[in-house]
Structure formats: structure tokens, C-alpha cells
Length: 281
Image (cartoon, rainbow, N blue to C red; front, side, top):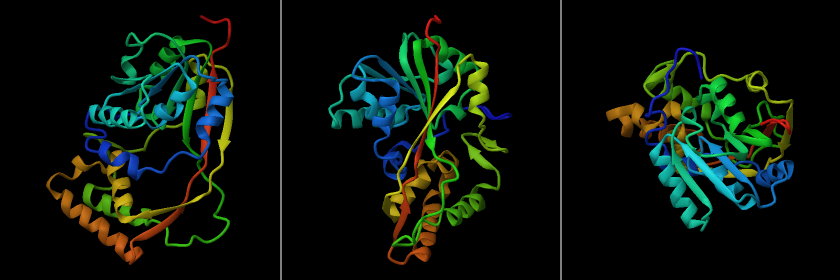
């Protein structure tokens, strides 16, 4: 967790309805790669910490006996449950709790996944607790978009989303320091997961990169959903100016592409795995 910042329940307030539409998916085949790396063939239990609307939980459910999604945002869990029902996934359960509440009586797991969520936690405490919850040979998995991808091999067929200009609008409305719930992140979110996991007693890191690169077409509504899916531009942060902010964002989109159509490349997904040494209890 970032220094001088305290988590509160408004971190993603109002974002759940926008998350699935606004966020780009993980690279195609990501679930297959992760299942193969972990030897998942339909047995064992999986814990998805900070599961949000259940994206990873539901993708990984076919590979395990039971998948448990844990999140402190009730709206995210309601969206996850809705999506599970649509997909007729029944061997999944949703738990309303923070990572710091673990073990929360949930028992042991073969794998614990943190998909772009670990940085919101008290990492040292959570890593140590999760290690105790893993069975011997179990794995701690960190999923995120690959940072610093190579340049695009060829021009896109449409203008790219004007993310930088949208960021300017957010800062003009909310101030230059990144908002996060009721607080701010002066220095952004922390990294250095390798050090944290090593200190918690895990072994060396195993890394996999799942390539992507497919061109994704996006419309104005998709990009507005992306804005509202983020903690630093969650709807509640704008108060009574929410409608004005949305109209300003849509104006930026119209200037960037009069047809309100955009293209971007799906980023690769980085999977990092730390295992609990067999023989340890």
C-alpha cells in the first residue's frame, strides 16, 4: 500500500457498472497459459483477491474445483455474480472482504491470484497471510498488463484513444495529484512485488508473457466507461459536476476523431508466479 494513503470503501465507488465495458481484456489465451503453468486440470481451489467484476475468477473457474472471488466493493461483487449467472458458472462464490481480512475462514487454496490488485493492499501483511493459506506447492500469481511494450509494428486504422488529453481533463477537474477514494496518491501506487514476495518467504519468480497485439476498435461509450472504471476518475469524485465532466470528455473524443471511432492494440499480459516450496506447511 502506498505510504501516507489509507484505503477506504469509496475507492471504486460507481465503477462496477463501467468496468467490463471500459477495461481492455487480458491477452487471448491468458487463462490457458496460467492453467498450464500451474498444472490446473479441474481440481484444486483458486482464490482471486480483489476480483472486481469477476473477470479472472470466471475465466479460471473451468480449471478448478472451486473459485472464490474476494473484493471489498459490494457493487463489484454484484456485477461478478450477475456475470457468473449469465455464463452459468456455478462452482464460484463471492466474498465481501478486504485482502487484509484474510484468511477469513476460507481454508486453503492451490493458487491465489492478484490481477492488478496487489498494490491496493498492505502487501507485506497480505503476502505473508496468503502464503499460509496456500497448500504445499501452491502458487501466488500476479497478473498485469505488460509494461513498456514494443512500438506498434504498423499504423492503426483509426485514431488511438486520446488518453493523455483525457488525463488532462481529469487533473483540471480534480487537481494535479492522483485521487484514490477519499485520499490521494502523491507518488502513485507501489511496485517491487519481487522484494515483497521474497521477504514473505516465497521462492524465485517464474515469468510468462502472453502475447496479444490484436487491434481493438473502441467507441465513445467504451472510452467513457474506461474513464469511470478507474479509481482516479471514479464517478463519485466529480460530485455534482459529473455530467459536465462527461460532456467535456466526450468533446475531447469528438475532437480526436469526428466519427467517434478509435483503435488500439490489445496489450500483452504478464504473468508472474511465486510458489510455496513443497514440504512446507
